Image (cartoon, rainbow, N blue to C red; front, side, top):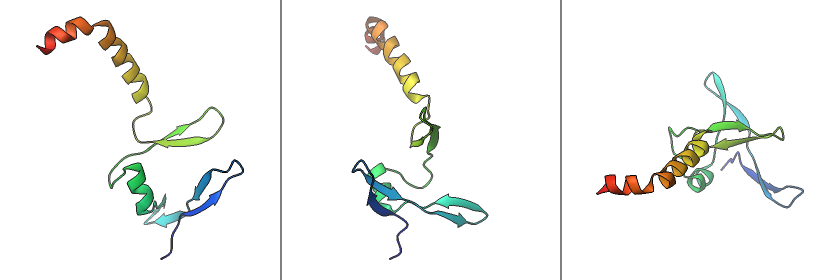
Length: 90
């Protein structure tokens, strides 16, 4: 079986997976092996967001980049209005 993922070790001793960019139709893409998809809980149609990091790197996230900020605001609101929300839940 020809796999696009080849595990290796980084200088820090972390496991590193190398993916090859491939032509898919008229576009270019990355193909993730089934094992990685299962580990990341991804399936066909899921969207990944590419987020630029301050150090110049990138990372993929499953949720929208502003999701964490929105959830923090929601938690603050739930804490502030806990009593009112408890009454509404009755």
